[in-house]
Image 1 (tube, rainbow, N blue to C red):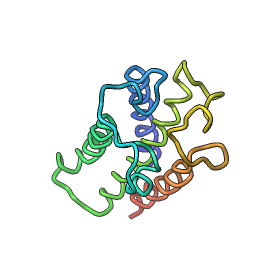
Image 2 (image 1 turned 120 degrees about the horizontal axis):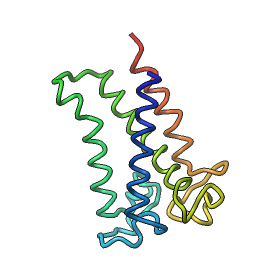
Image 3 (image 1 turned 45 degrees about the vertical axis):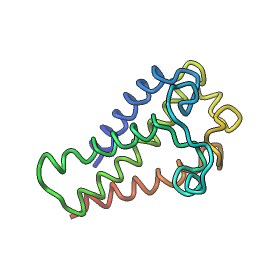
Image 4 (image 1 turned 180 degrees about the vertical axis):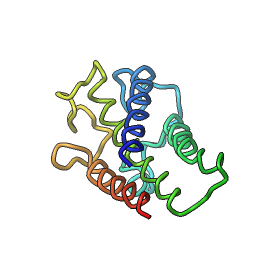
Amino acid sequence: MLMTLLFVMLLGFFFAKLEIAIEGDAGWATSLPTWRIEEHWALDWFWGGRAMTGYHAWAFSLVALFFHFPLFFSGEFTLNLEIRALASIMIFWVTEDFLWFVLNPAFGFKRFSKLHADWHKNWVFGAPVEYWIFSPLGLGLLWFSFQP
């Protein structure tokens, strides 16, 4: 389990670096030439109130497919492997998002706040609420997926 966790976090690091190179100081694709849906009732439920962008629709889909690739490659579809893939996706996105701030020269840890990252609408205890939901959920599901 530990090796899986560390590898997922390494993937998050690399994707954060890629996204920093793509977005620069303009988080949530605000300066990218992509479509945006700023307001819709479903965004509050499924997207944390953030805008839905073409960039993020493709990025999230690509990552989900990457984490499911081993299941398709091996032809082995089990509930445990699906839980492991979903847990890995959760851990990946929390890691990637946090590292986007920490590693981004335009932000750094000092600017990791609602004031500087207004695309994250809901913050609790100094972090986006999604971190507090998906970190323990992802870790718990990952641990569960490795149980015999």
